[in-house]
Amino acid sequence: MLQLLQEHEIRGSVDHRDEKIGRKIRDAEVQKVPFMLIVGEKEQEQRQVAVRRHGQGDQGSVSLQAFVDQFKEEISEYLG
Image (tube, rainbow, N blue to C red; front, side, top):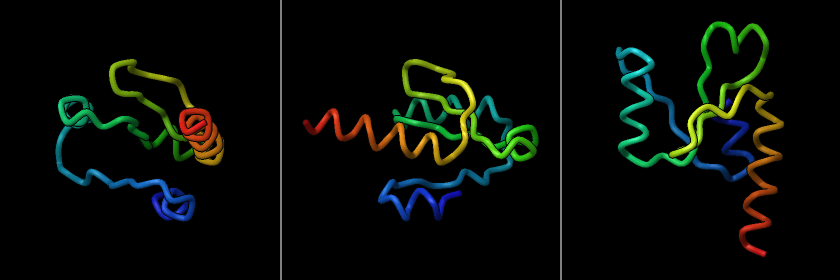
């Protein structure tokens, strides 16, 4: 998944720490990470990612490609 993001010039990293998901989400919010893509067992089975946006919380689950498309569209709109 990280490779697909990088192929579309989207920076990302994976949090492999041995912490509970809630702690990882809180830490990312404090660091003001704009988007968090969460992949648990359910998401793996459904081949989706759960999207969280800084300051807005849970945005639902989508395919990784759908997230990439939406992200690129938002960037294009922002840049005009």
